[in-house]
Image (cartoon, rainbow, N blue to C red; front, top):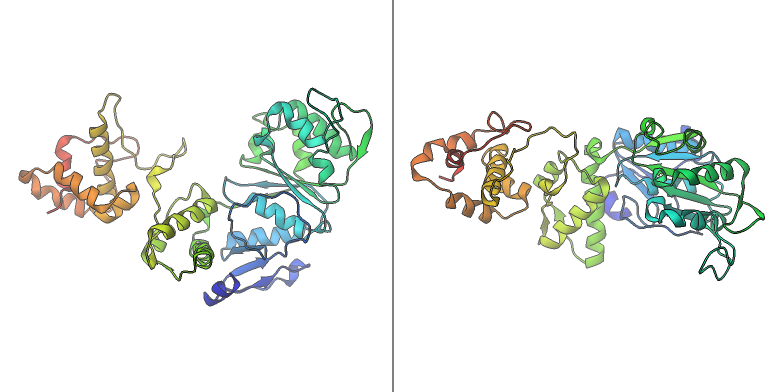
Length: 396
């Protein structure tokens, strides 16, 4: 990847031991060497490669890099906060790789993926005969991460009754396996992550207050991709370079669709961008046009942007027509952009409009062509589209 990014005139910065040594440039890539010894880690295709690189040229990412650099060599706990897909585990790996524990294991555990009745046994281990099926002694994640770093993702999914034991283990540095009586000393740095706002997790009883303050000595917030628009072209190019190497191709990104990508909301963040590039790569020839498909995402409950109101009892055909017409108006009458937003072909858009065509209403076509936003008829949560509206959106 280094060669491809250099061709894009991106500056490489070695991650320094001292934050004051950071140099600035038109773009920044903080290089974190991966440790030689590694634990179990997921691979989500985030913006790093075999060199362990964190990539970005935005001010938001520069702030994250600077903060990670200052706290990496500390032994204090760190809580990483960010939406799904922002790369919280990658940040945890980078903290580990620059810490004094870099030669030790890095163990990542998703607390939400373990059944509630097994969390304690998985974290702290169990003795032989502790329960039915416990045929031998089992080391938990805390013991396996000894001398290294334990990353507890989705920490707010941990049962409240178990949080008390976790707090005691963190305070004392000792634990007892399930079914055992002997205390075991542990030497682990604990990093955690959540996609909930820190100010709400205690109030909503997702995390004990005393445990929160023990886990959140440092709180690092990872920005969503929609706040890092200038990073999108760089990230997309990195993902494309990987695919070109894998398939032995030399495809390039379409500048027009890349410009549209900078204004996309990216609810899935970097993970969504990676999947978007891969999907578009497979469907494209020499030039990769990003397939954004925004309407396939579930909008947040508090999202009051442009929408179409469809009354209960509306037929599927009528609902489909309302959505297509509203999208076409939003796109200023552009069938190509409408097709891209709805995830269908331009031919499908044209055929549906022809099927609704009324030759006597051609004069209304200018309403769609002149619209730059959804405007009057389609407002936040209050749009009602009648049959006559279809005529203003037909091709001439």
